[in-house]
View: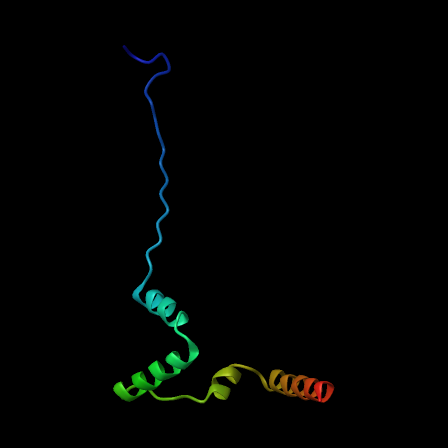
Length: 84
């Protein structure tokens, strides 16, 4: 017996996210305690000659203008003065 409402239609929507290998590796690294992470980084630096240890300060200030840097220094020294 045919339905009095006509043909049945349905719509389905599926959302799926797949993690890239880099995302999986990052999730694993975020779960490692700091001491183990530092050891792991050192091992990677020794095992892979293409890697080199960088200057953290240079990484933080890269892309900042001279004005941004001077403002950051002033704010740092003001906080030091207020705390000390």
